Length: 413
Image 1 (cartoon, rainbow, N blue to C red):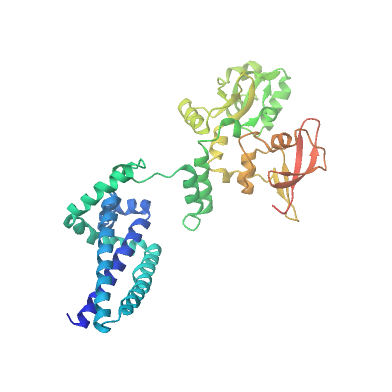
Image 2 (image 1 turned 90 degrees about the vertical axis):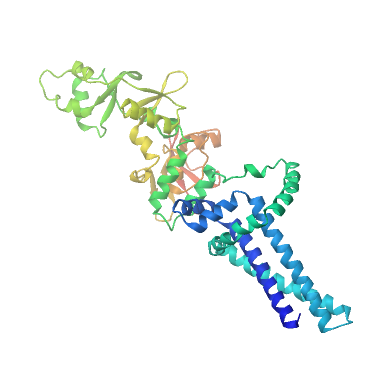
C-alpha cells in the first residue's frame, strides 16, 4: 500500500472515531421529553433514536466496539507510516503515536463531543439511521459482550432491561417551569406553580382565621342584622347564635336581599333561607376539598380542628386563589415604601407572603406571619424590636396584647 493510501485510511479512521464519539454524546444528551414529543409527531429520526435508547446497553456496546476498532486501526496505520518514513528509528513510532493521541483528542473526541452536547439532535437523529442496521449486523458480538456486562452490573443490583424514561419529581418539575420564562408568560408560570403546591397545601394554610370570620349573629336586633346584610361585601355569610361554634347555616345574600324590604321580614325568614353548614377537617388537602366542593355543589365551609371547634372559614375562591393567585392583590397587606422596604400586615399567611415577595419562609409550622414571628421569638415582641426572621430582617411596627399587627421588612432582602 502506498503512503497516500495509508494516510487516506488514517483520515477515514479519524472521521469514524469522531462519528462514534459525537453520536454517543448526542444520543445520551437528547432531551427525553422532547424526544417523546417528536415521537408523537412521527419524526422518523426520533422514532429510531427512541428505539435505540430503550436498550442503552446494546447501543453503548455498539459504539464502543466501533470506537475501539477504528482507534486501534488508526494506531496501527500510524505505526506503519512511521516505519515507512523513518525505517530503523524506533523513536519515530513513539513520536507518531504522540501526535496521533493529540490529533484524536482534538478532532475525534473533544470537538465532536462538544458540538454534540450543544446540538444533540443535529447528530443523534442521522446517527440513529446508521446504528439500527449496525446493531443488526453485529448483533451476535454485541449480545456476547452484553452477557458479561449484565452479569457484572447485577453485582451492583442494576438491571438494564428495566431501564426506562424516568419521570420528573415535583421539585424537578418546578425547576422546569421556573426556567420556562422565555416560553410562557409569568402569570402562567405562577399558575402552574400553584397547581404543584396543591398537593402539599391544606385548607388550614389558606383559610380565613376564626377571629376574622364575618357572620350574622341572630341574637342581635333585627335592625342591625338588616344593616349588616345591606353593607356586607361578601356573597355568603355564616349565621350563628352568639358564637361561630353555634352556627346554624350559611346565608346567600342574593336570596335575602329580595325579601329584606317586605313587611313580614323577620329572623325566621333568614333561618328559612339558610343552607346546611359544611364542616371541613383542618388537615384536608386543598385539591381534595376542591373536588368535594364541586361534588357537593357548595362554595363555602367551616374548618374545624380535631376537637370539632371552628378554626376558620374557607371558600372556593380561596382554593382557586392557590392556582390563580394573581387575580388577588395584597396591596392592603403588603405596602411598598419609598425606601424600598415593605410594611406588612402580620395577619397575612406565610404562603401569600412567599408568593407576593418570592421568598422562602417556612410553611410547615405557623400559617400566618404573626404566628411565625411569635414561634421564632417564643414571645410577643414589643414594637421597635428588630429581628432576622429566617434570613429576612424585619422590625415590629405595631402589636396589641396578644399578637403582632404590623411589621416592616428592611431593604437588604
